[in-house]
Length: 312
Ligand SMILES: Cc1cc2nc3c(=O)[nH]c(=O)nc-3n(C[C@H](O)[C@H](O)[C@H](O)COP(=O)(O)OP(=O)(O)OC[C@H]3O[C@@H](n4cnc5c(N)ncnc54)[C@H](O)[C@@H]3O)c2cc1C
Image (cartoon, rainbow, N blue to C red; front, side, top):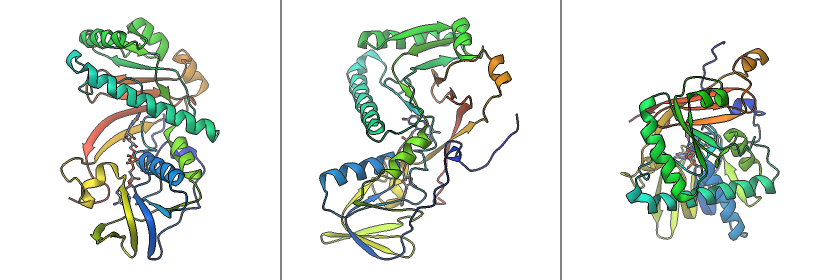
């Protein structure tokens, strides 16, 4: 297979290039400024515009809206998770709270794609938690027990069944959960940008470097211009501390993933023509692997501390 390795995002490369973006080219004023236009900022803008119809709302991003982590992820909408510190029985209450949040998130995305007829390759195909190590059976069994006690449908699978379902003999043990959705995150983020309400003004490639509060106004600065706002909402994910907010709460990490070209008919047939699937790791920081709807293989397997915007 040819190796194509560059800085583009495999998901957004499949979409038409954007040409309608606007840079901040003058000093402006607004009622609400939302900094960061990933899923969080785009959702905040939509909600705010709904409840504050007559207010001037500005959404600003240092890069193209939605094309940071929100387009560059593995595209799982999960209903349950493993390896998140909430899977021991003593923490069941917190685990349940978390799954309720996942449920709300899934329903919000479902409502959005239905309302705007968004094609984002939505597939309610469930997901696998799997490992290539036989000794992880104990962990798989106890996860399955937890899911059973909470009413989440699941099944333990061994190498033979996993090979049939996934087209690779790599995995020795797995838990299949029928809840959970796979989608194309680039398509979802792009749809959220394209359907922004009229009273939200979006500026892109416009990074906020600093801000200060003066009486009841907030002044925010890009390299050349100033935005004066009454209220500010930070949706910058791991970059929060670079704006001097909650400096000890978050930090950016870079996860790296690759997406192959489409498998040829022969390649696809050779692995048993599997249906679209997604595997999450049983071990912490293990790889996430997907066979996409259009027969590409996605592998997300490295993580490093790095900040693409600032040199520390
Ligand atoms: C490889 C990978 C795989 C993942 N897989 C999944 C998955 O399968 N399922 C899942 O649910 N989650 C997954 N995630 C996590 C998910 O992508 C993030 O949780 C989600 O994108 C966060 O959205 P956000 O809007 O909060 O942040 P982001 O998408 O990071 O958006 C923040 C935005 O803020 C902007 N910004 C930052 N600082 C400034 C500034 N000073 N001025 C202006 N703009 C600024 C950035 O440019 C960026 O666009 C994955 C993440 C990665 C990296």
